[in-house]
Each structure stands twice: as structure tokens, then as C-alpha cells.
Length: 95
Image (tube, rainbow, N blue to C red; front, top):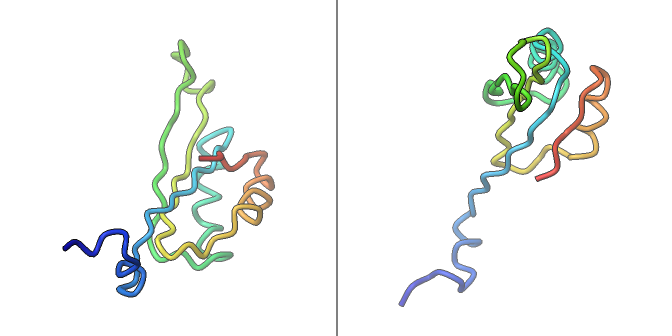
């Protein structure tokens, strides 16, 4: 019999694959956010920074930059992250 669905996975410490995606207007803002994340939230691992070109845009100036945070422990508050990234005119994408 499988332990799946019996609640056993909770007893063994379920692992979450929660990710937060912060959207920033430019690369400088994304890099500043990465630095500030460690100071403010004590991140365990380095966030991933990704350039997200808008459809049909060839110019890097028209790209948004994404900062992807892995939050396996589920300890980061979505509202607090949204307020934080707003300091750089960014926002947190809802899943």
C-alpha cells in the first residue's frame, strides 16, 4: 500500500517547491534587489536573475527583468515581498 494521500508525507516533513517571481523594470534594479534580499530576508540561496523580453521586442531597454526566489521553507510572505520590490518600481507575479 502506498503512503501517498495518507498524511504520512506530512509526518516525514513535506518539501515545498514554492517560488516567487519578482518583476523589475531594468537590470540595475534586479541586481539591487538581489543584494537587498540577502540583507532584508536572509536568503539561503542566490536568486536567479532572468531577462524577460516582451513579445516582439528586440531592444534590451524594453525588457523586464525577473528575480526568481526559491522558498522551500515557505517562510517568505507574499505581501511583504510585493511591498519590498515596489521600492524599485517592481511587483511580485501571482502564480
